[in-house]
Length: 132
Image 1 (tube, rainbow, N blue to C red):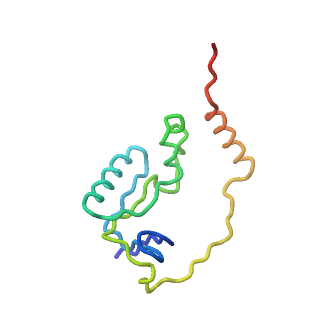
Image 2 (cartoon, rainbow, N blue to C red):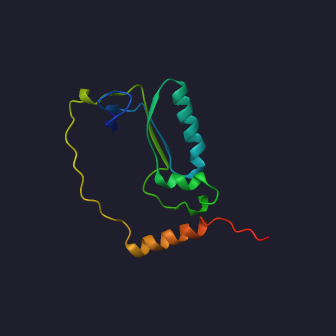
Image 3 (cartoon, helix red, strand yellow):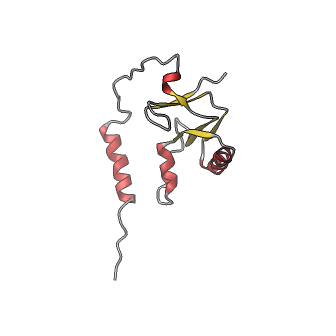
């Protein structure tokens, strides 16, 4: 039994929306799997299913030919990760709704690492200069 859930504070159901126990999971772990994932998502939508999930931050690199080569080769999460659901349910219906706590945020990068990465981005994103 699949206990996966996607919970929204707001959504199509007032008071909170839950997508629980997906019929299927659509993932793309690398760029060459993206078209297949989008095709599967389109088919699910055509079949009257609901989709809930995410496009990873790194997916944004693929939105521009100028950034695509910067896509990190090793990633912790899939580029696309969506569940396919029959329908959402009301958040109030959940019987196992327990409070969630988060640990304080911890940076993964120190300032030197951030500065190097940001400097690379600034060089790439500079507007073109035209000489007359």
